[in-house]
Amino acid sequence: MSLLDWFEQRRKLKLLTAPKYKHPDSDKSEGLWVRCDGCGSILYVKHLKNRHRICEQCDWHLEMSSTDRIEHLIDAGTWKPLNDHITSCDPLEFVDQQAYKDRLEEARSRTGLVDAVQTGVGNLYGIPVALGAMDFQFMGGSMGSVVGEKLTRLIEYATDHSLPVIIVCASGGARMQEGILSLMQMAKISAALQIHQVQNHLPYISILTFPTTGGVTASFAMLGDVIIAEPKALIAFAGRRVIEQTIKQQLPADFQTAEYLLSHGLLDLIIPRDILKEGLAEILELYQKAPYKKHFLQ
Ligand SMILES: [Zn+2]
Image (cartoon, rainbow, N blue to C red; front, top):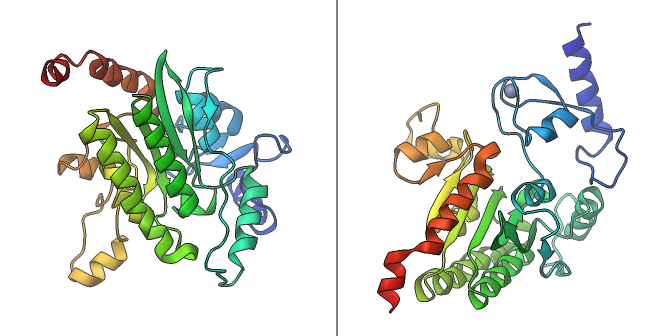
């Protein structure tokens, strides 16, 4: 058996027997190696963390937890979480193969999070910002009433305190276990953004990471004054197979990638993760000076 086969066998066994993500406070001896989704290389987790979870072989941007994201973008010691007590009350008492309440409980104990987004305020190279970071490990980053409410309150807080909003998207879309209540969040967040951006002339920057799909793409992900994506991020509304079957055509290989969307005018920038914080600081500094806006508002 080759070394790669051994790793693959271990990986499969682990997927069958244990949760694949561990909260930072849990047992540190587990999960020392991961396989890159881009090139298949086996990567040492500790080195990967130092490289902001970018593969050293192929520059693939591996999934990043919301906690790592906050640590990466916000200056140390300045993060103040907002509304971290809000939890879902399972309004539809939804049950599929498993009760929604049990799924929530499992996701909470596995990730150490309350729901699929962390929101709060902090400094980015000294510039105060309101940041929302979604977490794909919590039920696929799905947007239910808690994600919608936390993001809306974040935006409203930012409007009241004249802060720029940054939202890092990582989501499979609306949370089906909350049905129409999940879909309502799209309109609620968009309405809060309208007040923030249009009525108060305050900036909102959206960052699209692998994957940003469904109702998240169809609402706040695409409403940024500046829309940034990470390289090769999957950004979509409906899935490729659904579209191909509907229009009865084969789609290009790079369809729904950040690069494809940029070339078709749907994004403003693709910024690699290792210089993302610097890029955001440059954009925010430009907004801070904003000579035209100051003249316009006088
Ligand atoms: Zn790789």
